[in-house]
Image (tube, rainbow, N blue to C red; front, side):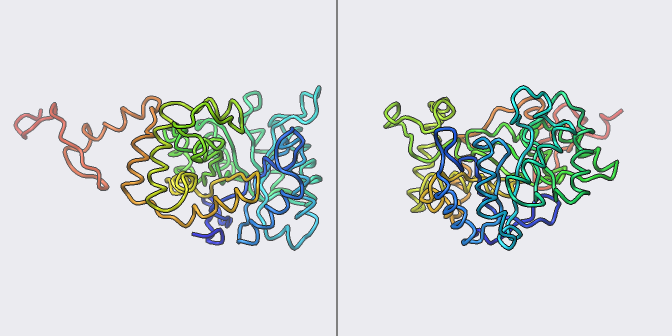
Length: 361
């Protein structure tokens, strides 16, 4: 599945590449990241291979990420129209201004204008709420986003890092009021972060949202660079964010990734990326690339096929503990299915149920 084997995002008919290019590292303004020249090379390589989905945010590298994309693509209409540019609002870029961030109408409209200026375009393809703003009623957020769509400044909308119940409320408001619905959900999802499978993933599938996982390698922890053998000897590139995940459970999963990679003549990172991309509900996985070499090394993850036993092994080692009622509901078939098989799932008969007609009152 190369980059130009496009998928539709959620219930929309927007066509995007199965790997989305994350631009969080574009720019060296925070003391780390990718130079302008290298960022442009990464963009060119991704697009040359058929990639068309680019993800950024207003606050990434203090706005420089958006500007790099704007300078290289936005100002050139032919280039700009061939790509799907996604950016986010919520982060406050104006210290001391309480309305400089958040998801209220004033903040959203102002943030959109700023992003359009930096991206040097007159429309944003996909506008994400970066995270839930608990201070703003969701109907105000959805109405403001609908106005941006109707004005032509935004094409589609999505939510990132928001509780399932709040996303559902927003989507149902859109349906009943006839305003612009959400088409996508951006969440952290990897072999080390599967708790999203309790509420967020099934909600997204039910609500028609295409899932775009971020940090599928957990800041490089699943790349194979950090192993049980070199534990404590290699400094993590992403500091505490990566180091906090380096534990016995992680090393067990990495061991399995290395084992599978050796069997398939590929890399642990590609195996981990492929696992995420083939999960139920996932449309396009966001991959970051600080260097061109990283991009070239990870893209072949689309070309490998994990055997059922590979998936089963990874699923077993990474199985999450989900919040109630996930575990309870997994056993509910015994109560309601009468010992039958429904949609391929067999359930034993409930021993406390009447076993004969004579026992039934």
